[in-house]
Length: 195
Image (cartoon, rainbow, N blue to C red; front, side, top):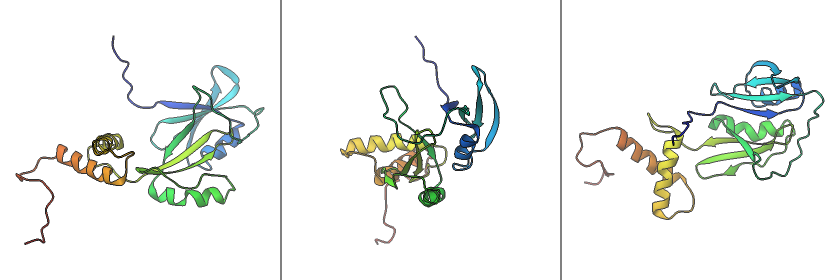
């Protein structure tokens, strides 16, 4: 038996309201370029809009002018999508609450997640959307998942309940030491002022 190896998210397709409501939300609020559209090939009565969430992959939306926007929360059941999270820069995150407020969009306010900060709100069809900003940048040659994996190992070894910034900083140090050799015999922390 062998795996079918994933190499990243290809796209997510959502059921949206009308065409313009969908464009106004995904591009007009979240800044995702509207890259192309075509009919839903499985249901020609619906449109199929394609947006770039910022990494060249796709968020697609099935649209139908007969579906009215309804941002009220829906109770998620087993197997349902709870929420979608999108990465934003620290600079954009710092502006997110004010920009949601200026549109009158209800939101959670900033939530401290230890390794990131988040704000939650609903799309026009009631789907919970999260904007997330990491509190760290991975070292050269590594990705966010590498840092989070190493931080998890560190926090578990220390018996801490969740990843915090100290675990992130220590994980980055471990990853840099693992990636890059040094001529020093002792790479431990030093105090150059103690003489």
